[in-house]
Length: 304
Image (cartoon, rainbow, N blue to C red; front, side, top):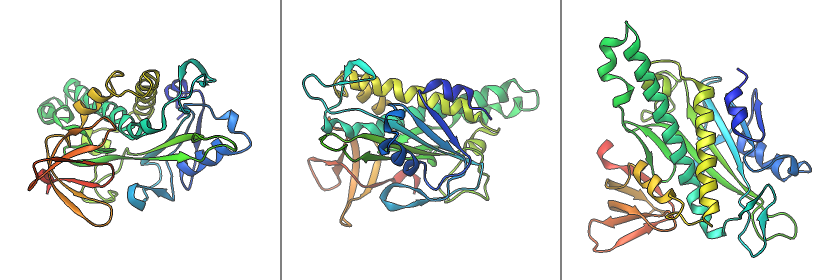
């Protein structure tokens, strides 16, 4: 595959036949001697990742050729008077406290890309003479949603996970050198390949082999467009439309949830929404006031 559409969506696209971790590969490239050759929006992709990482230190492994590991570089900058992104002189950098929305922006873009791929699969099934009888139960009826903070679920089964990592500041600078946003997307895993009982793939959900280049290009272009709107608004999630977009896609909001908090504490309650920093607001079962959760492992209790 030549990844024509994905290459056209970003300023630099590198496909590796194999990688330990695409996040590590991009971090090394973006902070090394050729850092200037890795601009905002640069991407490294592989379909064979041998040492991937998930949230909370989990490992992420998958059979060769059946998943995509995608790492995208953001260079948001730090908002200071007179400091502009050299590649986009009309847009200022982001304040550091606005970085919390970045994983949610990535999750929203992937959720929309997965929805469109499954809608296309349903349309193809409906148009097929052999698949017409099955179209009523096809992927268009599946519930594709963002699980806070950055998993994509198809009817409760995980099809994608996202991990964002800050790059260290360059010498003499205060701001991080960038953010690497990694995504692991299950493409063609079958029932025997799935890493957990709560996982799925685009093949299993859609009933056909997915258009990998189309899904990837959709995700990359959607992510960068939403992020650029967010950056142009100075990191204001409401003014940029990011808050409304994420809230509409986030299936966690309104759910009964169990949150495993850092330190081993447990929070049971209802996810009421997101605050201005993208944190999850949870009203505990024995509380009259919502608690803002910045980090934690969230379980939707309707799926237990």
